[in-house]
Image (cartoon, rainbow, N blue to C red; front, side):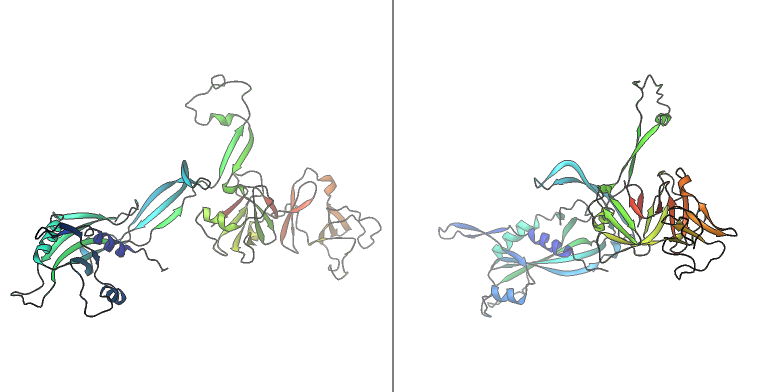
Length: 452
């Protein structure tokens, strides 16, 4: 368990001491002397040795002045009779007002929302002892009369102003009175009369509460429809009993709104976070704090949407992520190859520049049936090692009749095709103009999702 300290017992003591901080006694009035009303000091009666020395002016021959009130803890014990379900959790939701940094004040707008999980506190009985040190019986009676009328039978203390602290109110009950600590008859050596009052406080000690910032709305998708050609709702036959009548109109666009509208760039095994404009790299930590989540290395997932239909998640590409300790703007991405789509036109052995490499040259294996290569440069009649005419972005294949063009890119401008590079296990997609890695690139808001 992590260290924490909320000064709860200390607050109970301080609030209890404040009960006795303003009592006064009358002194003087004899032989025409004016009556003085002096406030009786109150202090915690278990001070450090240094404080005690200061009070005695660093001398053993000085006794404490009177009158004064000393407060101390007599006992602290578990209250088994008040023990309740130790595993109970109470959940509260709270919305704070938005804070304006410019004016240093709270506005009337809604700010952050939080969820507070309060855990069952532990009950204790706190016994407090109050010693009244007085020089004579008259002073003692003045103090006792002022104090005793307050407890009929109890008074309430509020230990803090936190509205979500369900134990902030405590009852203080007077349970015992010791009028005098001396025996009778008294001798002439006793100079101070001490009376003792005992109080009981049924207190609670709270474990730390869990405060989480709410992030219920992760993404908003807004449907924007075409106009109604000048018609009003009555003209188009609006029926209030039809729940979703707007679906009769053509969908023209969809607006994606996510917190921060962040974009990401996927390159190999690195995920870089960018601002809304896709220009400036951003740190991942502030975004994760919005959701009160942390990345669990090799457990948390990143899902990438490679098709335009946001409602279709059957073709999402996923992989585990981990924090990159060397770069706060990047996450380490470990692709799950099982989520890659299958090749629609067959796999290729490698992506090559046929003007520089050929079968059996040391970079490519010797000729064998079924070899397939995606080429990046044009092949003309002058390349005798290939004996085929092909263009960049074509796929060539070796068969019984030699090399042939298996995929002619010049005739596939309206075709979407996928092929896996067996050399790197990456899947590439033909866009009609060029081949692109099916998952590497930039992703707009709404087309990538973190599963933490």
